[in-house]
Image 1: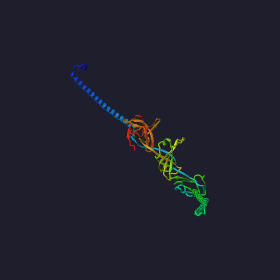
Image 2 (image 1 turned 30 degrees about the horizontal axis):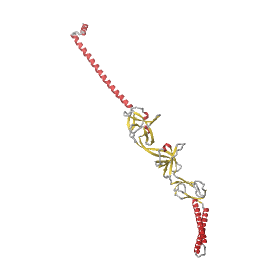
Image 3 (image 1 turned 45 degrees about the vertical axis):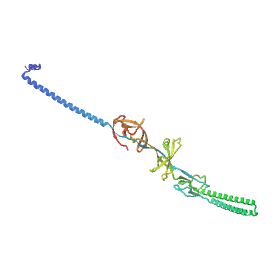
Length: 395
């Protein structure tokens, strides 16, 4: 009976009164199950979507964390001095060797020492002149004799002129006495000239300073016999002026001219002396390809001729970007830096470096100064790599 009733209901025919209640409850159960499943699905979908968003946010954060932070700067342009450096020896700017001018003889006294200042004409050493003094006295006596003879000849001529009008003396006698007087006067002049010559020779016996300056060396002692072949007895720095003879490559010499300022630092001292180039060598050594720039210096005890010193010569100035050395990279293709484009991506830029100083490296070609240049970590970047810039101001 139940089987038939169920079949009858499934065929869409009218069910029996008892069967209708059970069918209604069954549909309610099915609807509840479907609603529960829909709710579970909605919760699952919602929770799954949240997890995907969180994962996406996490991945984005990870990607953000992988972008390196680099320090960049806009260098601009500034006045940069063109500096030429060189080394060389100190010397007197005008060194004057002093030797024997006269006959020479035995040195009796030396009146100066190295380091003394002398004036022009000052006696540096005295030579024995005992023999020469006797010669001068002899010549002085000859001068006196010649003057006496000239006075007698003049007196006789004057008396003859007074007597010629009375007829006691002929005109021929007057003329002879005139000639005698003229000869006596001439002998006086010869004797005086010989005396002056002897005195001049005696004055030249002493060794004298030709110009005012500083005594550098002394190569004579009392008791030494000197002559014109004895060589240099003293060396004098004219006016005490010194110079540095800096050895420079020929390309550096091309940048220099007389009058440019320079700083000189002698070895063994922290002192720096101001000077200027007063002469640039017109000749280049064909072996070393170097020339000499002569830098004039005022006297100072620390400037000793023969000493070694370094020079820093300001050859001029120009405007260029200045970067720290950490910003410059090098490889087989030359020097380069990394700059950032509008997307903060690293772009390689070839450069040509110029003057290197304590302030940094001058960039003479490759940058105009308006770029954002990576100051550090350039060795770890790649072309086109995204970075996070941190701007720094250069001094």
